[in-house]
Length: 295
Image (cartoon, rainbow, N blue to C red; front, top):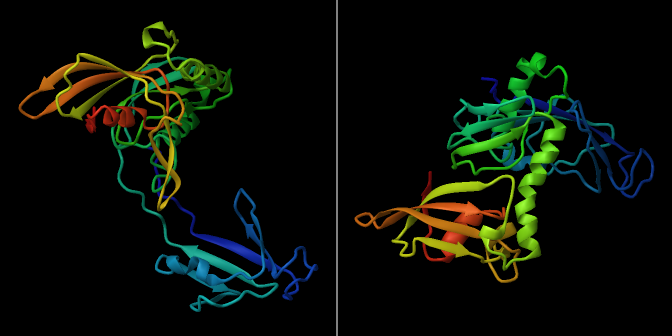
């Protein structure tokens, strides 16, 4: 249903400059400029030396030619006026669910029952098999139903790829602005007063999740107010989100639904007032009951 392999087969580059290091001629300093051709976005890269070792790791998936001749030497330096063509094999994305169950729809928004395994936005290995691409494809098939409005199908919040549940999506830019403001409202309240109890926080959209956690949760209800922030971690460029006093305020209310004594697991309902990254996972681990899985 509207899903396809990512079909970029080749990219063509041209090298501008006179080939002399430090030259100001030919449109750029240094060795030259590589200009990407034929794509919607044009990218200009200023270089001192353009080496093929930058694509060496892709050699098993691609064939690189310069002026029509195959190149195998990763240390070859491009010359001014050369044309480099990068041929890449089609990208086969991993399998993912593609059927989206519509729970509610009107002229402004649509509520989808997102299945586990389907990513919301393009990223990583998933570029086409996502909720966003599905929405865009459906909109292109149903333009007549949105004839009086500008079609702008887009999710207004996220659910993890492995998480199933209701996902709200806007069908117009105005709806996106309004819904995004509703989602941000609770987070801003918590940010202004981290000591505020959840019962005192009113919001137009409530976010309620179910999760299976390790161990037996003794209390019937728990309110978690642990801030969440980023901690630098080796090998992770952007760091990891963790429970830390220096983080941003976050508030979760946990309610026990069922205790599995034999399996040493507890089924809980989690209502989150704020929307910090990985909030449920971090908060439940913080109180000693890490997730077994999400439902």
